[in-house]
Image (cartoon, rainbow, N blue to C red; front, top):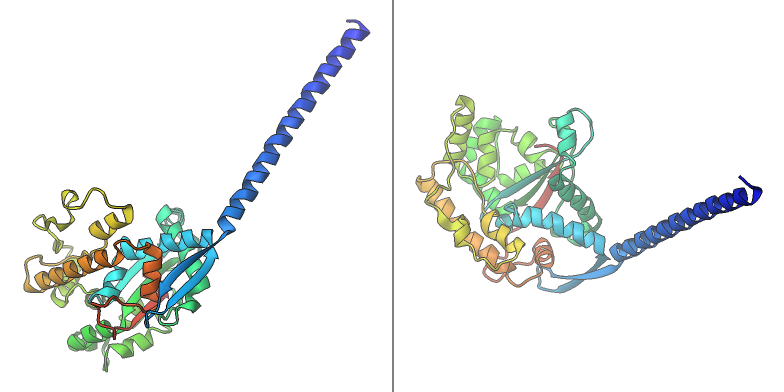
Length: 329
């Protein structure tokens, strides 16, 4: 090979190398710009509007990313779970849980903690903690008992309804807990520094079921069924067509679908007992009230209004609500 050919080959390799470097630089530069634009879009401020107990209007300005996380959390709690029934209905307590990856005591729990459901609630709750001081009518606190490391429970408590159900079943609470119970408010005060279901109520499934609004007889039947490994069935049976797919309007949003299909409390019990029939009637009425409340509203703004103490006109204004976070099932 002549010297001239060698020079041309070397020039070709240099040119090719330079072209690859330019391409890589262009790709990296484009990626960097894309990341910057995405971060800007997520950090861009956006305003939310909500009402308080006196129906005074408030504006909350927060980054887009925080709004998305709060919206995800509230949809999990108020549309896919029954938290709205505690504020707008007679359900004393609603309870949701999520997992933290640490402490690493169980590999299955560790992997489950990264599920979409857990990540949505966990990140949403961390975001909520940044703004909870703006909602003084709700009381939140965190506990870390050792009974279930890594588990975190979020509870919402209607203080008046909880007090009423404890007073109605005071004998059960006193016999199980082995002490005098003045009223439900006493137990709520004790839950300020202890897990309400696991420490104050000592993890007793009968008392927990009563507190969750599942009915006294149903709760005790569930406890006996657990002891005897005998299932007792669910209060909603095949005859209940309210949640069937064909009974739900086809042109509703996904959130409205969740409100119609999944938000209503579901629990074990005798579906035909007087207690269950009464509870089902109450929860179906609340279900319609919840659907009506959220209709044509921004879901997050409407939920923030509830947490700020706002109540629709049809709701009794004296119900006091607390949100509690505990790290135990």
